Image 1: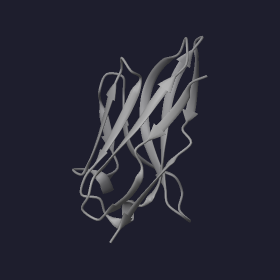
Image 2: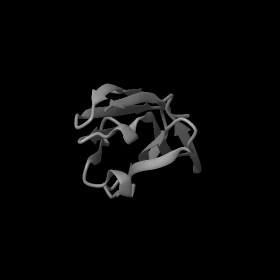
Image 3: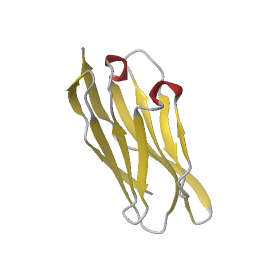
Length: 119
């Protein structure tokens, strides 16, 4: 399996910035897509951004132009730079990775990190 450790959440005022990090560890796994999801109270979990091993990215419309996802393949770490934060960005942010091990595809979730944006 792949273990994920997230960091970087916190409380910030509207207009501010935060950077989330998620480090993946696990032997024998080939990590493909790394992504960030978020879940606000009473709402379903939604995709925020994803990035392939080749660097192709995808963003939710609500964060385009404000958030940037990146990854360091050597460190198996994915980042989410969040700028111009809005109160509606308040949620628990989860890291997700898709990986292949022994020819079988798996997915793994992080424990989540709280992001709170005050108005």
